[in-house]
Length: 512
Image 1: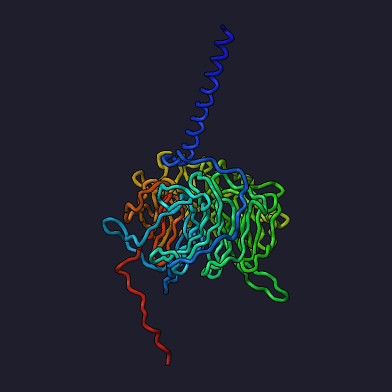
Image 2: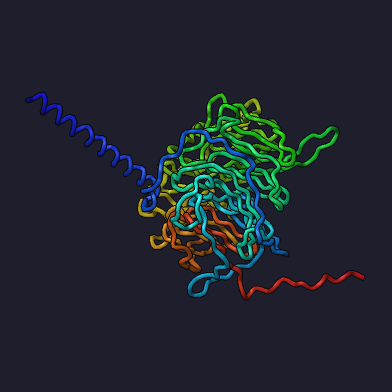
């Protein structure tokens, strides 16, 4: 009898202990700044483990949309061409908004995800995910149509100019799409959730080359899919007795085949690969360039720390081990001048400032300047903004009473202000344009406009834009039009100042 009772007690106790442990893990995850609204997660499955054969570069379809003429504004990649999250567009924005908010120019339904838009000369590019049924519906799924789809849209009306699609079945795990395309006058490069890469002609969508980072380099895709946005950089290449400039795409597979690689956009030639003997793996962070004392390098946050890789040879110039964040590292490095780099993350990591120095042998090394805890500054997903020698960002849930507030910090690591308890932004994106912060509440879909100044939080306007769920995708702005999205819907807002002088269309006077 005692033996039976002991067996019954064990049978009850063991599952109970596992249940308690599971609750504890979930609580810890949420406390670290992870998403707290799980309403749409009930149907989510774990990501597949098998490698799927993908027919790259996929199928091309021309649309009825037309590229508008006369639009020159650009936000051509993740965090703009300057990689600081600040617009260089001179279009004046309104100082306030009418009741009901700024005018919505167009909107469209998308597959679930957080992939943001790039804008270039009147065209909007977004890497979407086709769920195999009409977007925004609950109809039956055609599994043969599930795949990544790059859409080229008109900025003025959202009509589709063209799209390119390839079949890759992906189960939702906090959505699917994650990345922002990189665009130049001639080339557009994308990275899909499972590491599939396209390089296309910007205007026509014609395929130039493609690759699979998992199959070709053994990339280990992070748990919540690829968050690394592609980088197109301009480099000088020796061609016989002359030096020419080329557009080069830079990737960090983080597999045994290559830690990082450079590929010529025009020819598809691999210029160099970086060996990976330490098995440093991919994170959700993106690569950024830095030029230090005439040496150009690419900075990347790997699973095992930060590395600086030579832009000329692909050789690792230095490594800093003491910046490893688990289970996920999302924000990208912020380059400050030609020497300093700022890093931030969730999960109580806080923030870190590094500087590149030279050791006794003249080799580059990374030296810690300061480190601050999450109560001062830390970021879950979004990369902080660098503007007028100050850093702006939204705090994690580990910041105590100031959690999820916008803050301003100087480059010495001293916080100057926070936005206050009535101004919280969850995991939503933000950027700066025309001297104004535009910040989206990732949970409610409310858009706030505030003055970008270290003097204090100065809110100018707020409007409810989206009936949001997980409005986490990076925003983009060009020609006064702001593109933002939530989990399933993208919208374009006209933020232009209606009272600003119109650009002159009269021909310039000729000198006698």
